[in-house]
Length: 67
Length: 343
Image (cartoon, rainbow over all chains, first blue to last red; front, side):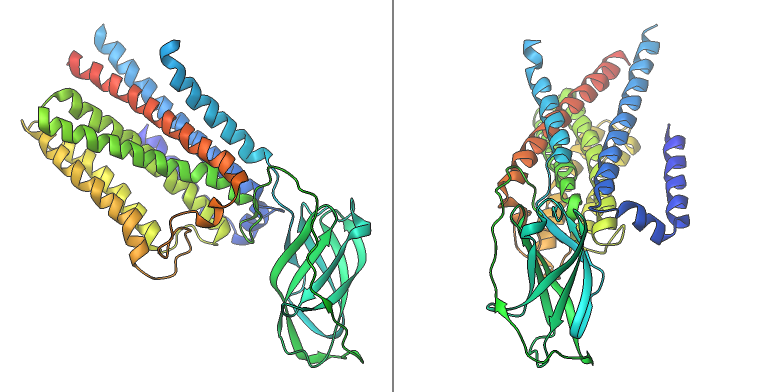
């Protein structure tokens, strides 16, 4: 799980390094910057689902202990 | 079902706030002009508006460049391309005593739209008109549209982020307060139940803290131009994230010591007050101009607080996320409690 998180972070970091600032700005600044709001809402959803997966794993551990 | 009413309330509040954060329109405004510098005499420039209804209300579209509180230079409409794009022309007189002018546009639907310091006048270029013509500064009122979010320069649509980014921090504060409460109770009573509760709520607080940092960073990139600024508020938030993380490292490292819970509880009480000082107090004492709203001795959001339309979504968002955070903490505690009784 941790490995996946680190992998995603590193990928995002390289994306950030590679993306020409102009292109990024062009994409996100379209008219009223509404895409920034979507990016923020999506990042919260990703965080919540990542937490759900961790919870799932913990419950599975508990179930395995029971047997 | 009857016991779960608060969870349902939290879910409804979060869904309502998320939906209306996107659905509510922004007030009309001017995003930008193609030129920032005008010369003497005849000039043409084009304007990009936001919700500006140039075509829908083309007959009443008019505007001026404000010189001071009474004088204004009239502008004429050349061409309306669509609802948010239009071209205008203006005749800049010689002997103007101001070099920076504000742009005002209005029609019957939007009322006055305003772009401060839109143009700089280059006095050395162009052919000045024979006579200076001025009109009076007059603000028009548009239709009253309910439920519009405020339009702010450079922020534009991202003002909707207020309903996502800020509730994350409020939830973190509530969960940290819960953690502080259970740490104190653990020190008083020595019941392992309180230690587990303190650890669980601190863990969920850490999740909301990292979500707050990520959403804030994305917002900062597109409102201020950088992922991170060396601001007292931002650095304070980053340090408080580390303080919270250190609590778990401390718990892990003192695993087999008999009084590990006590050490962790004492540290937790300390870190709560450190966090409060770092996020709420120190940024207001630094005195340096901060980009983050709520600095310079002002309570946070004073500029948005006045807007009741934003508050109608912002308060439910905060309440909903706090309830959801407490629910997540509750799940986390029940799992760690099960784990503790099993082993």
